[in-house]
Image (cartoon, rainbow over all chains, first blue to last red; front, side, top):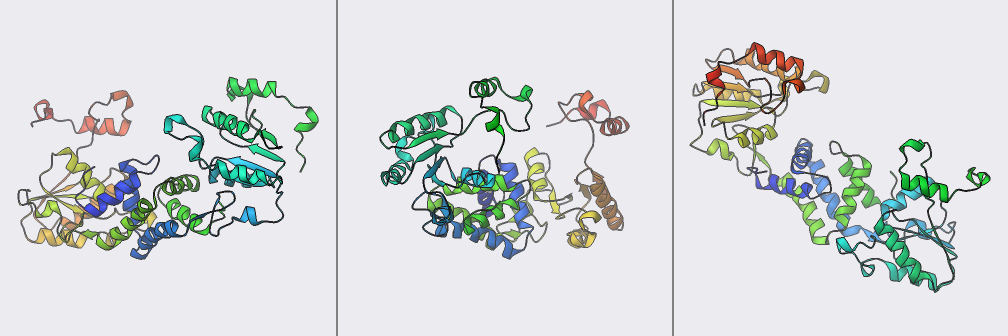
Length: 206
Length: 206
């Protein structure tokens, strides 16, 4: 897309690098911003400068926060014996929204994916092992995506964590609640048959 | 969406106000930016501050540009007797890409839409009339969207421009080139029958 204005072109290019945004959508975004008041556009730009300056990662679990320890890690009511390992902070938000987990998190910052050039050394694994050294943790839950890369990371982690005396678990995989069997893929349906649970356990206790 | 970090929440909210972007997509955008180098994130923010400071509107046609007159208006090779009236700068880009139009533009900055609270006084109409006062212009082409609002604007403009001795025209409406008749809606197909052209005219002269 060739635009007459350089600043406009630059703004469009910046938006177009976002995931799933092409040049036409980026152009639409920029025109939307230009229709706003100058101070709102300034606020938009400043927000990202502030983000760059102020964003911090929790020194314990790598969650994003405004202080050096995140709200979850500093909350004394949370169960410190369970750590849930997730890929990124979006997963923390998703799990927090379920209100079913009272333990702590550990954000890996990615999963092992040789095709994308991500190896174990790019992930926050050493700090996870440091956290286990204390002996305070009883269980580590792997809550990574159920893809080849997620499974590889689970396997790698399980080998690394073998030496600690902790229980390792993964999220249950099965049919979605409210989902019809005819729309469930064979792999998931097959797995949910293999991993079937006693009927009493399927009743949610609140 | 409730996030633990305020700066993060602010960045997500800023993205979420863009057209077609919800909170989940906005969150994805922010995480994408956070994975980049700090200077790239700073550049992202600065781009929009610059946009706010440097963007200008052509004093003649309201096209967006870096100087006070846009490249189209200052290009002496363009035909100054024809003005194409468009809704916004995106339409200028679309028409320029066809390479079929050698005249000048006039960007209205919107179309008359009572439901959205946009009336004739919100559009750049007075300056269009000023441009016609000079008597230099022979033809005004209405290139607005073919919706009720576009047609209303065309009608309003045609009444306003009556007093000037200029030819008024609109874009031809008809079947898309390469489009099958079975996929064309009845209204468009009907109109293309009514406005049929002599066969010789349908051959594009390059």
